[in-house]
Amino acid sequence: LEGYCYVLTHPGTPAIFWDHAFMWGDRYYAAMQRLVSARQKVGVHCRSSVKILVADRTVYAAEIGGHDGRIRMKMGPGHFDGGGEGWEMITGDGDWAVWWKLGYEGDDDDVEDVE
Image (cartoon, rainbow, N blue to C red; front, side, top):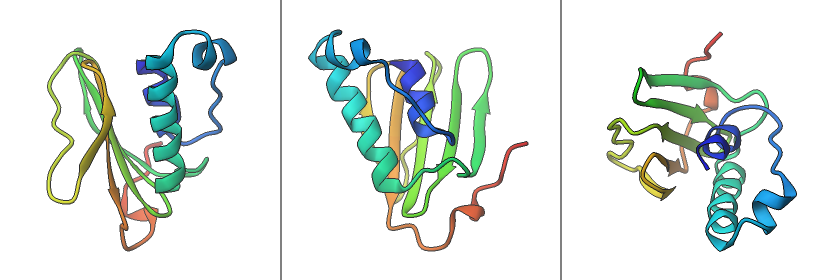
């Protein structure tokens, strides 16, 4: 699920394999549903901005701007707390987690682009 955590929270046009969603069990299906729902609700799109918050051997964390909010995500066994004022954890399972902040006023250009 760490791969889907990245693909479904970052800019681009994501894809989910049929068997991963419908044949790997309820746990995978429910997690992917929450990730897709968060992407849609926050308004992440193919040109969303990304700010890398942490990138080391044990954890990768980023903040992604959308039309209607922002997402923070982390992958890896290292520690990263994506919470804070206005942030809510929406899904996660040990080595990955996703938080969102809805109703963000301003546009997603406030999060720096990574080139």
